[in-house]
Amino acid sequence: MTWQTRIVALPEVSGEDFDKWKALADRAIEPNVYLDPRFLVPAGRLRPDAADIRVVMVERDGELHAVHQFSLGKLEDRWPARVVTTSGAFMSIHADRHHPLVAPSDPVGALTALLDALRAAPLPGLVLIKYLPADGPLADAMAEALASRRMTSSERVRRSSAYAAVGSRPAPSEGVVEVPHLGSGTRKDFRRRGRAIERDAGGEFAVRDRAETPGLVEDFLEFQASGWKGDPEKGGGAFKLDPVHERWYREVMSYFLADGHVVAPELVAGDERVFLAIDLVSGGAAFGFIDAYSERFARHSPGALGRIAEWRYILSHTDATHYDPAFDPYYSASTRLYPDRRDHVDLLIATDRRGRAVLRALPLARRAREVVRRIVGRVRGDRGGVTDAAE
Image 1 (tube, rainbow, N blue to C red):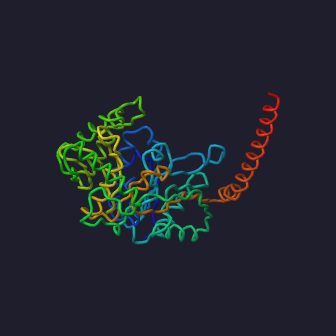
Image 2: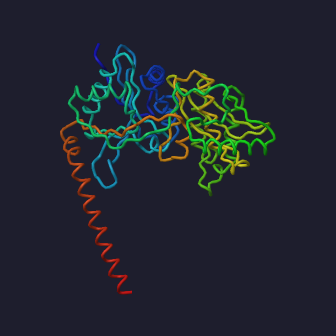
Image 3: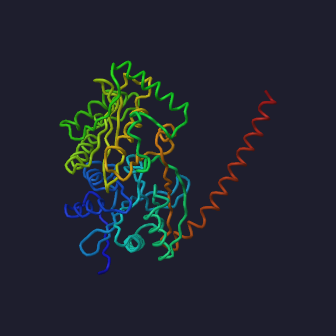
């Protein structure tokens, strides 16, 4: 049976589509909670910043075999080319994994059909997929699909992101905030900070999963808003500060909790909460969603200690295939807390002749900008020297 493809606006995804999409998310060759319908579909219904998202659906034999989301945008601020991009207003802020969901039965065929659908639609001939895994089954299938259609592509950015693989499962004898992959000086510093919190709280560290505790959704809202995230003057973005943001959070949580796909590691010292995280499970993998820490212990880095306890708990107490905290490696201090790394790339694909022309012109345009930048820098330097002499 041949592939059937269609493109629908995210707010118009039907209940039947939702169920098929969810089944695909459960078996995808590369899990991605940010393309799980339980995360994305509520955004299309509730959030204005997600209303422009469109979804490509690839079906065969009554099942979804691939799903991809996109918006329309510019390639760069200084480059006028329009692109089909995975980094729209909502995804660029709330998701650091943008790769499509693809079924394992025929990933190359499904991706080829997906690319054909994008090329056939009245869309720009450039497709930008951000945060695509640089290796693994999806990367291999994408390379083969592009080759089969003779579509050219260019790697724009490569990032080495935090990750925690099953092979990094903690030893049972280690403490809940141990970081054996870091240097001895860093380990000693974290131990010192942990002892200081335990001393102030009057009890030793322990980690427990709050996922099945009644009232978790409301409890986290209150805890998050009690710290700096609840203060808009400090740049806080707590859910309770924005009714739309809060409604979306509540609906996302209702879906994942109903399926038993939430992990909520809580780090306590004695009777006091130090840190609480919400992690979502999709396709067997756990992904970071949101966390908060007690500001009473702020000088002892409770957020860092909590994130260490979080990934250690997930690897040692759940059957998650891996844990992806899913944040940009720009946050280097947080990235170093995790034992493993995985590369992700921003891949720019030309689907037609015009797109290929733009793709060929980009290196020349980039070099021209660098030449202009150097010339302007020298001119400014020369003018600065004259000004200094005159003064």
